[in-house]
Image (tube, rainbow, N blue to C red; front, side, top):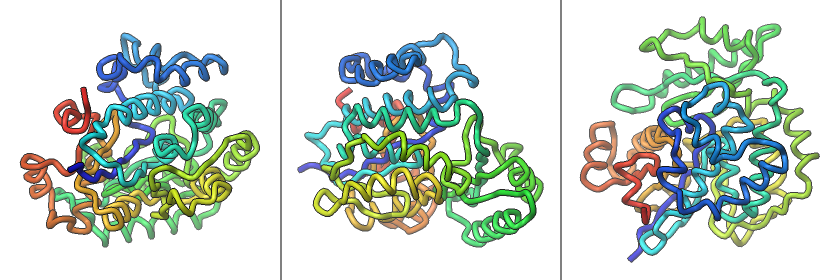
Length: 346
């Protein structure tokens, strides 16, 4: 009998130095299936994803640019999705983090692959002439991977207070497992950095080449996106989709126009609640496993935080999660060499 699987699509920031060569390592057999991405990028005079993936050295300035990172991540995740052994897994729902929503639309077939790369590349390239705002990430989770509710509430209060100051813009961008992604203008972000303790000489961590997505600062980007992408052919997904509000788009009741409006409206300008999407996926679809598409594996920890937060299947802390993973992995991160074999033909 097939295992029920919830698929999670990655967002920006998942293709890093360790992921260089991901396509060549795992997907040399899928050049033809990814040709639509290369054809599109050729028409807009951008380097091919295989060229970027095949560089001798990872470059922050090159590989993290929105117009490159988005297409690279899409290519890796799309190829990973095609590698899932669907003789063993029944995909019951699909969700994603931030840009991962666009990838989810593709693999659920709410958009064709060609329309998906148009969406991903257009939105990823929207700020190539200058970022609007920026993002940083800060933890609200303990060493046991339990989300600290009081700390989270305190951080929300700090964000709201800073946003009330003159010339300061600061908002919650993504509720990401045990982390908060905060976005705003330079004045707002600097004020936040001065208002919270430094943790492990790592946090608060600025996210390089990331604009202030999922905040009102993106209103103009949302409007331009709607104007540029009116020809995209949105359809009812073939597999249920869970968005950044925890809303379910089913194959039976989805209104394509509303899906377009959400994708280029609310999803761009309002917070993305990844925790909520995972919780809804678990409670509404009862998956026997969660498959996190690559590249990268960092999203797996955010999924684990969400599991622990609701005590899913009795998992209440990091030690219990790690023990479960050793015994019978519930979360399969395809970006991890040791885990992708559980989900993939390769």
